[in-house]
Image (cartoon, rainbow over all chains, first blue to last red):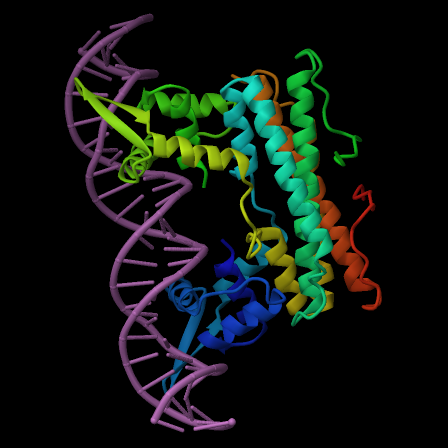
Amino acid sequence: MGVREGLLALLADAPAYGYRLKTAFEAATGGVWPLNVGQVYTTLDRLERDGLVEATEDDGQRSYRITGEGVRELGAWWETVPVDEPPARDELVLKVMMAVSLGPDHALDVITRQRAAVMALLQRHRRTPRSSSARDPVAAAMVSDALIVRAEADLRWLDLCEERLTTPPATTARPHARRGATR
Amino acid sequence: MGVREGLLALLADAPAYGYRLKTAFEAATGGVWPLNVGQVYTTLDRLERDGLVEATEDDGQRSYRITGEGVRELGAWWETVPVDEPPARDELVLKVMMAVSLGPDHALDVITRQRAAVMALLQRHRRTPRSSSARDPVAAAMVSDALIVRAEADLRWLDLCEERLTTPPATTARPHARRGATR
DNA sequence: CACCGCATGTAACGTGTTACATGATTCA
DNA sequence: TGAATCATGTAACACGTTACATGCGGTG
């Protein structure tokens, strides 16, 4: 999810042909998000089918240019955040939900395992400085930041779940100013 | 992503037929994750194809039971956290990455817009107490928590991105003990 | 020459999503 | 009777992913 809009964003900057879009996409993401070339072409076909881009054939080179419709669609993409109604399916959340439905003991067990796994992942992300020796250090650093922040949020959520399972059900506090998630 | 494993988890508790799995899945997720019945049957077909479940036909009722193979697969699911190599595609991250590749001014603009959108979403999530009047208040509360924590993490990450774009590129600090994301 | 990078595709598969068709049962 | 719920499926589509095929051009 995102290849479609990603290519559209690149084409908003300048017209380009398929292969160049692949390299541009990978460069924009600091080289950490590889993209199969084949997907570029299929995605371009769909974009053309939907009238968001136009192609001009020149000597075997198909150059793609964004259309007015595409510009509008892209503008909406920049501004909006994907609606979560119904809430986006998240693997970790689903896992804990299912474990809860199988019983609180099972749930606490899964939470413990998941916390250990996420903590290991977090440490790995913190140790490896992905920013250096990448094509675009800033982009790579941002992706790295995202992984770290996301993992921290997962830990925090696991703590909240454990609280909800261990404290009496009357106490349904919202996660407002709580912090930590370090254990 | 997750329906497959979700159904498998439910079948690990007890054998069931298709329609019951739909209601069980929705009940387990506090009623906030609706599931089309059709998908249950297609997913069950795939699970059966892969040998993770077995079906016993009885008077038009196809009852599904998890197999040993399914139990093993499910056990791995409980323990592991999805590997992020390459890092999972995230819409917000992709958006900012693409904006960065189009120029820092564009990027800061998109970051501002996205922050506003995420903040609005966060406030909406904090206001609506999804825990009450749901089939499973605990599950619904957990999903609500996840949305809140996730949105907070997104805000935090947007702040970090802004820092990386506005501070001199020499300073590449890691997001260790930083907190805030309240603006 | 053989290999690698450039460049364009096609085919197949996996999963998720929606819409639609078909019956049986239950209940106001 | 008519509507809602239960119950089982099929068809079509979207998107992502991988593998594969093909041809060109430069370079060791």
